[in-house]
Image (cartoon, rainbow over all chains, first blue to last red; front, side, top):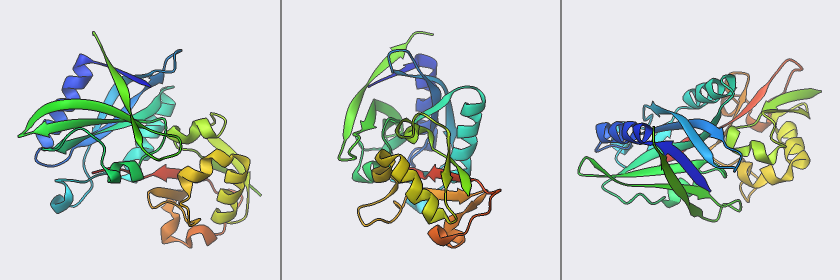
Amino acid sequence: MTLLLDRIQLMALQQHVEGTYPYEGGGLLIGRADEQGRKVVTEIKPIENQRAIEDQHNRILIADQMYREGETYADNKGLLLIGFFHSHPDHPARPSEFDREHALPWWSYLIVSVQQGHSADVLSWELREDRSAFEAEEIVLRDV
Amino acid sequence: MSVPVTIPTPLRGYAGGQKTVSVDGTTVGEVLGALTTQYPNLRQHLFAEDGQLRSFVNVYLNDEDVRYLKYVDTPLQDTDTLAIVPSVAGG
């Protein structure tokens, strides 16, 4: 389980979630699987949090329509939706029980801890096939 | 009657790597039942232990969420398409 992304993509998603602080921000990860089965991010797609504003401090929701558009976009380019990134404002970059209940296997769940408005830890997680827990996923930063 | 069902990207590996699968059935529930019979490893990700669709699993008949129709009892026509769309959510 490895997720590859480049430094510009990392910076872009960090900037996005710092911009949504103190609320959760996030979006979709688009990419491909390489010959070793590693997921390679080719684009990040920040998406507006659809939760009511009073819930956004600890919840994020991507609209179904945005998911469908993202999947169609990736399919049409011969790419894949490979994951979901979101922030945990003033909380660790570890998945919550809510995250686990809403997760699907194989996808990368990349979480950015945003502390006092600044990005801190960035960790990625993959759901076990039996849905019982997340496993940490290695992040490899590629040079551009 | 066979209906094309779009499989969400994270679950395609449980459906032979296919983006779309043709499944027989005359209602949404029949199609989902046949789909998970054909690809049993999909079942735990689509259905909870009580046999109900997981709360974050949405099914669209063409462009309408079946929760706003007759849910799993929604009847299908032979020109219909179904799409399984996960609610992508975090907390």
